[in-house]
Image (tube, rainbow, N blue to C red; front, side):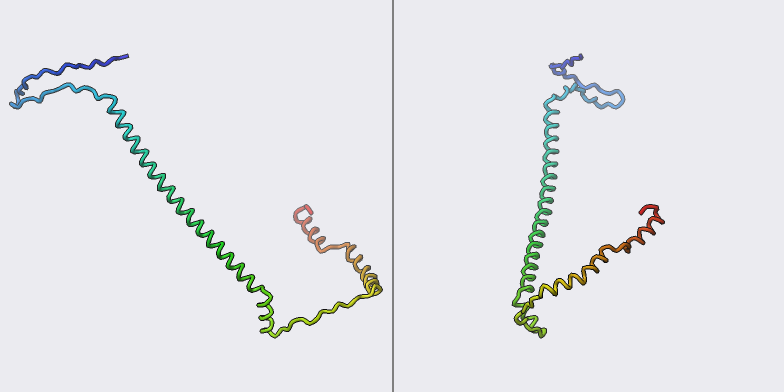
Amino acid sequence: MAATVHSTARPQRRTPAVSPNRGTPRPRLVVVERGSRLVWVISISALSLCCLLFFTAILRTELAKQQLRLDNLNRSVVMARDHYNDLRHERAFLESPGRLSSEAAKLGMKPAGNARFVPVDADVVATVLASTGDLMDRVAEEATSPLDQFGRVKSEVDGAP
């Protein structure tokens, strides 16, 4: 472990030596003490603070940019909801019975008269069921299907049904 020795004594003043070649005095050389650690700590702290403030400004700028983007999205969502509500209102108006009857009258249609239901005898219902029952069974028991031919072609081409 090396220890540095700092001289606290001031250098003695000497008369400047005269350079033999030029005739001008030589500058006086002085031993300069090494800077203290406090200067380095303060300068590094100041640099760190400047970097921190710079990155904080960048972060604030990005946050403001994203907030503007969110505001634009919210505005477009509100506009879409308003448009949807306008379309619902227009659809309700177009489907209203009063408007439909006035449009039908413009086309020459008339309202329906009194509707009358005709009762059907049970014998007629039984006769119809008996006459079509056999037909229904034959259709249900159809042995061939249009998809059978497709299955045969596919099994020949791919090797699997």
